[in-house]
Length: 140
Image (cartoon, rainbow, N blue to C red; front, side, top):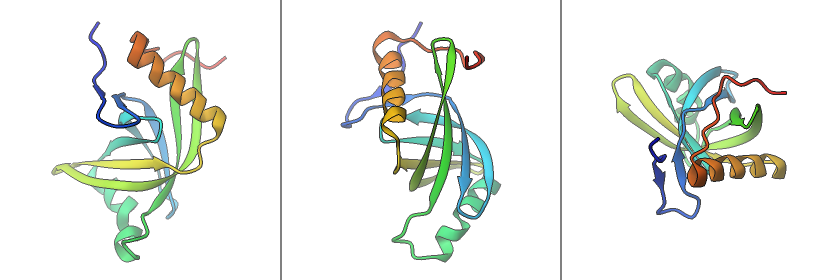
């Protein structure tokens, strides 16, 4: 099995991870996406043009120095269960990748200590032991 790609130039390394995340924007838009990578301080997900436009419409109309914010629910597969991490995030990166693919970078703002611990453990398992629990396992 290949080692996961870890970006290590940062204090909190990002790991490539395709995890389901539910995003709820301030405007009420709710959609599901897949992460591209995660870390202990944030994540990056990909979305299509229509969702990107709806997600960022308020950002473009308001003060650009005040980043848009979203709520997320991230599902982390752990041994025999799925851990749901919910938090409030700030959008810190918006990047067009292709004509219908955009990357959105989020920074966690209100992560509970227990959720931080779960996230840290998940990243540690992937990075050091290459444990990638299947997402199809149900929580117990």
